[in-house]
Amino acid sequence: MLRIGIIGTGGIAGSHIDGYLRFTQECEIVALSDVVPDKAASRRDEFGLAGARVYERAEDMLAAEDLNLVSITTPPATHAELTIAALRAGVDVLVEKPMAPSLEECDAMIAAAAAHARVLSVVAQNRFRNDMARLKAILESELVGPVSHAQFNSAWWRGIAYYDLAWRGTWASEGGGCTLNHAIHHLDLALWLLGTPRAVTAVLTNAAHENAEVEDLSVAVLQYERALAEVTSSVVHHGEEQAIVVHGRHARVSQPWKVVAEASMPNGFPAPGGDPERVAKIEALAAAHRPLEHVGHRGQIGDVLAAVRERCRPAVDGVHGRRAVELVTAIYAAGIERRTVDLPLAPDDPYYRTGTLVERAPHFFEKSTSVDELPGAIAVGSSADHAGRTS
Image 1: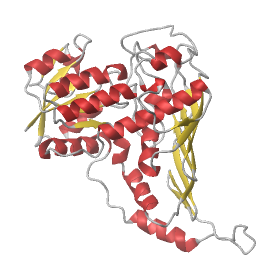
Image 2 (image 1 turned 60 degrees about the vertical axis):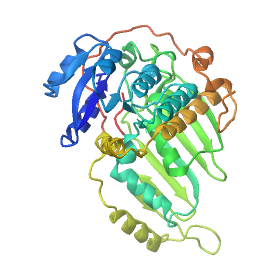
Image 3 (image 1 turned 30 degrees about the horizontal axis):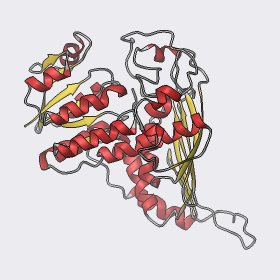
């Protein structure tokens, strides 16, 4: 029986606890910690974890408990320090997105996992969704053809009060705005579905949140060998209509689900009716997808538990988490410096280092309110096709 600890018991911790409770034959949550007094105890009581002990310091929990795995669900600026402490204590780690605000911190986390022969996984729960698994399988077939253009719309909406929470809304504590903390889901999917781009251009702004330093809207163009991908990162979009649209040479597929395939007339214009045979083949491949046993956080937690038991690499490891942070970093560098940024980013690039964003990023506004707690639950949004819950 694997012994689980939870570090940080805010909103997203509930998804982790729920996930572990789906595998009660394999693991048990034995400890929870949170720096806010009584917060961990409240979570313990909420989920009926009667035997779990609570701590205010993660260091005390790591020292007192014989743990196999911890979930780290604290603010982004704390991820690296807590992850490295757990790895050095001989504990495997599942850390929430984003892995860390800087590539320097990501590399330190990866190095610690290697040095102590520990499992390190970074949350990317949308890879564990049936619609995304289906989309990936179709793109890996030859039915769509080489990708020409893709659109990733990370469209969320958050009210002004969202950034009143103490750790949100500053470059130092949150690490960034919607590009890092919301669109990282879609950016990870872009990497998973299309691979790493060669270069990035971007623009950033704060359109609607006067109580936050960070951006609430960015638009980036990812440059591949011959293809382009657009990524819109937002917390200003009413309706939260998220979408992934991929156009290949032979067909377009998208989520929410839609298939279109054009065919050419002799003069190059679209033929009436398109290519129904190709559409039928794509629909058949989609229909043949075998549903995943567990989805979202539950699916990733199941994968991580297996990796811990079998001492193997999880489906989403530290390298995958780093790649997503690298893409976010390139978007920030491009937007702040107003230039095209080539990938990969080298260790001597200023934006590789911890603290560069704090030094160079614009303060669109100054944070005006700072509270420890906000009332209400985390709302997933109005659409069933969202690319995942965020914090």
